[in-house]
Image 1 (cartoon, rainbow, N blue to C red):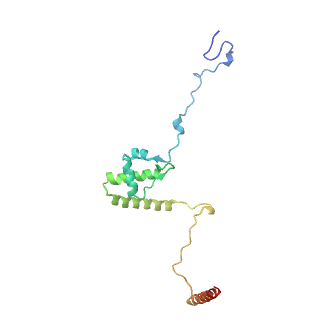
Image 2: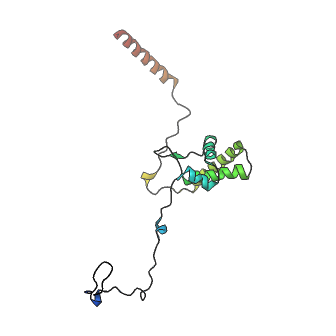
Image 3: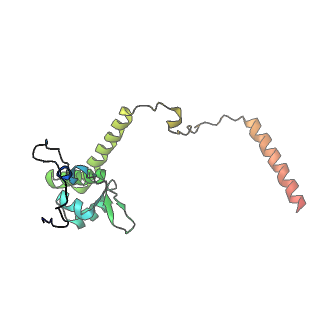
Amino acid sequence: MVQGEFFDVSHAKQEDELPDVSTQPERSRRGLKDFTIPKLYRSISEVSALAGVEQYVLRYWETEFSELRPHKNRAGNRVYSEKDIRIVNRIKELLRDERYTIEGAKQILKQELDSEKKAQLIDAKPPEDDAQLPIIPLPVPTEISVQVVELLEIKKSLLQLRERLAFTK
């Protein structure tokens, strides 16, 4: 009687055997790394390691540069988006590599982000559906075209209303 590791194989039939895998073509296998989801947010320690600056420097830059505003999660920890990481890398480049002062780096960063926003507005296609159009408030008129005669009539009627209300008290 031949026994397998977990079961008795003496009663197994020949057709019950598994096919020989050495004769079959090799199937491509995907590892788990193929299915990883890219991170949307990173912690301050990850950004610190990516940028090559200390965490306290990142916190200081947040106070100096209004463009760098990472969100905070429920626990109150900073979470940096890809945009925040690009800003951190650009600040580092301006301050460390190009040797700008903080004020100079602020100006350059502001100019670059403004020009980037303008380019995005120019490149943006108008939405195909009217329901997707942005709601743009009507401009406030700088001149009010009201005749003086109308204003005097309104004033007269308001004064009459005030007199009536004063007598009813």
